[in-house]
Length: 305
Image 1 (cartoon, rainbow, N blue to C red):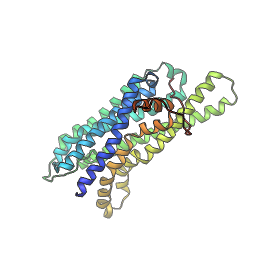
Image 2: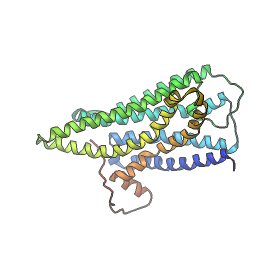
Image 3: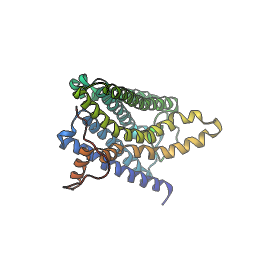
Image 4: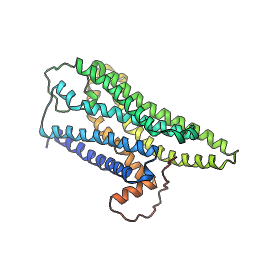
């Protein structure tokens, strides 16, 4: 078995884990009313976007196993859909972060806020950003005659705009971190204020947000070490490397980035399976477990407000 085939099998294995996790999230969101809160709906749509990305990864692995090589334009046509959905997924992460921020900072207004607005904003942001790059890339792309057995969205565009696209995706992911940090800071301020107040509804809302943010802490740690790291490697690291080592460094990044991204796609499933009682119960029911005893890991109920 050659190196390309081994790589394809690894991709298929990781993709299978991701598909399993995201399908479980989608089914649980549809089946369980208590999971269709505002954040839960956003998580469900994020799972749909991640599932589509994983199916594209399977098609890439299939071409690698069959030995099909594509030209530059052929690669563009094969994975431009993946490229677009990847941006939509990143935009939905922003939407999920904004949702948590609003729940913490504007709890009263959040009660009447319709999740459709956040979802629409996320989809439009992802489609307009990626669509603009895709249209420009499709117009200026030129075949150089070379055939490539591996086509990934990280190098689908001409070099003249690929670096701009990589930076946009990286900055979108940085925005996710900034919004969550702002929510944490606001939550900490509210916690200090609660020590001097006896407002029961205020305290209950604060406790609910605290529990939700504990799960997000785990999610954010995985996000930083997988998805954001992969975008940092593609957007920032090439600019930091000396020119003499850039070709070698870029080849290494190109080879490792797909695996880092693949690990990030199912992270919602595994984080919520571990940290959230309602999601865990739904997942176990779908796996055929009729009873589940509470383990030693501290879990909490979904924050649906």
